[in-house]
Image 1: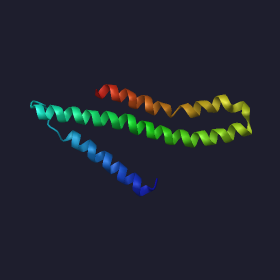
Image 2: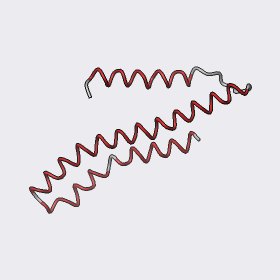
Image 3: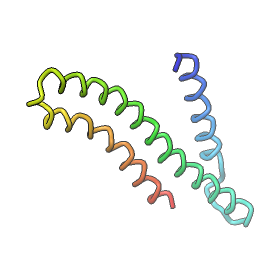
Image 4: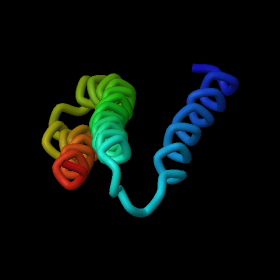
Length: 102
């Protein structure tokens, strides 16, 4: 992903976040309540989806280097597996945010 694509993606995510924050504090009307629920659903989907994409990218890079390191010294496989599992916490945090938002 190029630097330009990252900037565009970050701008898009921030634009969605600011539209959710621009709503009124009270949801007295039925239309505002539906919009609020919809924005919560979008936020929950982004939390889980972007966490999963980030985990996939991280584990792809870590996994390829893990295979190379284990090929050189198989005795380090157990300790290196821990480094492969650390990015999985991103998905767990996204899953937690999904339940908090709903």
